[in-house]
Image (cartoon, rainbow, N blue to C red; front, side):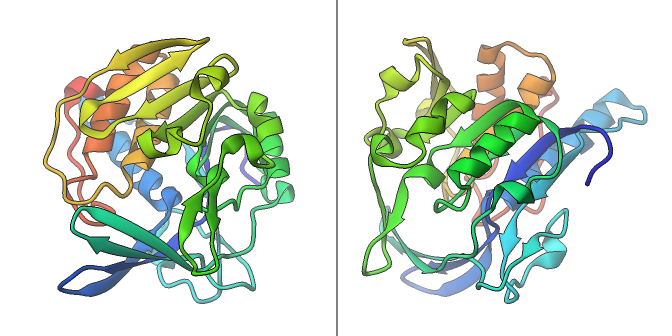
Length: 286
């Protein structure tokens, strides 16, 4: 257990991602925790360089669960929990501009008792229902502010192992939504969420790619534009967005400024395939 309070606690599965394109097939590390950790590490370095002094940085940790077959231990900022079940594995089939996702394995869920640290911000970044409703409640009780990505709440797997979405209102997470403060979703996921209704209970962050994002609070909507960037792969953009928004909150910025930073951070990852090895962050966004 960590001594004191963390700045950011990231919760979700780290995954094996298999990428199938027309010309080749390859594997890589996936899942929100490694993506968000890479961004936070880069933000720490950038702020430290700007300050030109001994900058302690954002103190973050992950609660992630993998199987004994996990291949990327050295690429994580912290040892994940190792369960008996195999690591969650997604197969991403890219056909032109379309992506079809299949699931090979789903690792053990993250249980309430796996959450042992207090944090100023909790980022619930599940991929396939691994953060249980009880775990979400536990996170909200030990974190001052709780963010949640809707993808881990509404994704299901059909008999062909393909990922599909269900209405949030029909899931076991519906009753615990008031426990969170911010809910992130994209345009596709918004089709399965009563956005206006939910925005009266929590702050909704609707990401829209090159069109920026919408911030919805108490039934009101605010558009936050962004500058379009060349895109190779959108994977991880939502994770970087969440990490950037959380960073802004910790810096004490307004919600509009947080959204601008989040938009910028989301654009940092789409120009590469996989987790970027080097991220250069403009001082104006620190």
